[in-house]
Length: 391
Image (tube, rainbow, N blue to C red; front, side, top):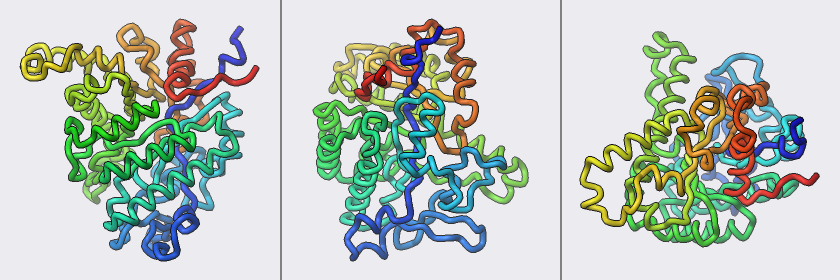
């Protein structure tokens, strides 16, 4: 019989649909007109967050919270008032978690992009930093009803290294459990991951024992696939599938960048998480990395590499899975089981919803009990310092 305490899981990737007053409630009045805000598009009927002087629209609010919507994506709630309460209310989220025996959830943003890059559109460094701080303050407050069950991930103003370090230090004191960073900072006009420019951020993360997250979509997220021609040829479902899978694989490229950057040898205690990208490609990625490492000039040119890329991955990098059934059922002997985390991506378009437990059992129903516990609870509990539920 399953131990009812050990049957709880930790969800390593979920999102909060931010309320319309997030910024006006927390920023000085002088910035209210320029801060991110929700505006209804009269042509489409959808509410959108708009950011910056050009009123650049992000994903419609309803498209960030489609879990349970009766029509298939891209149909979605028209605005904040129609999204599920658990998408934005912490008490409703806890009820939802209890219904699935999810003990804890890691929390990521929507409005700022998946690496804070959307705030670059504000074009005012002071306002950009203030918005990052406002979001982190909102996140801290949102977690108040159950700090032992929510895992807040700190957003940082990565374009400002000193400001990022201060924000990491500030939020660590507030109980945050991780750091959100762009896996492709060069896409935003910043130095590459390998640059010592980022060392103060890595050092701050190590000092506070905070893993660094590369969430999909944190690099260049300009999507030119939704053209009238492609929509006519592929349909919205086909375009959405190509966009999603492309983002998964883009994170694989970012992981390779990390493995060859030299960051992992320099900071052996630093942990990274590839969020929402899947795990089935990891064996190929690591085999390819080791092969090219062995046959290239890496050992000659980079004496700091004392291990193979796959060994650095096993020591310091994590991957997340949700919809996959084949990889957890058939590939655990090829995967670093101490580095795998379960997620649902609630309440996004590709999230698990309604069949969460069925998906878990489809992938891990025949797994060794110790492997199942690692993937569903123990790995995340250790990484994010989450205590087990009380008896």
